[in-house]
Length: 173
Image (cartoon, rainbow, N blue to C red; front, top):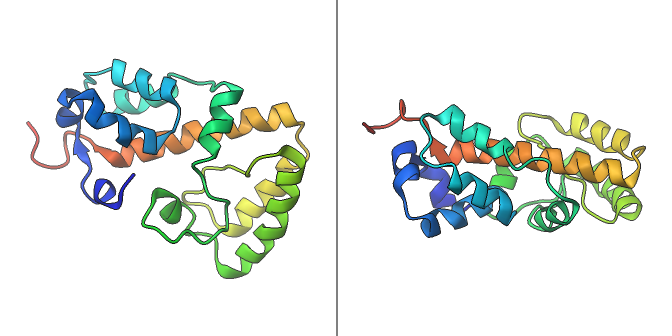
């Protein structure tokens, strides 16, 4: 999602009535899975913010190809994200010292599973995320792909909640 979309979230009423093609890029920034985007759009109008967030869960579980495709839009945990993006804010708990440990752990993870380590990092510190990565190295590849899919849905729900504000916030009627 662009930094202007992060700074200026839509109100729920606006989200409910906006042209679907205007919303598609915003939703794709939340989760780059067409089926998920279509499901969230199809559920409109939402009576409240909770119903919108619950819609983020509606397309779960994600299919293996959807997970692999969506992961391409995510930087490695611990990598320095140089743009104003969701990922930069979500990974703010990873400091320089932890980032160095992540480089080695990410390489091991990627050799094992063939994709980046994906986790909902918001509100978690680097040590906790590194411990999670190391624990997940014990998973079988199919299990780990499913875990990554659940993490993608959690990230999408978090981002959607930030992209669309509840009706009680702002001047909506």
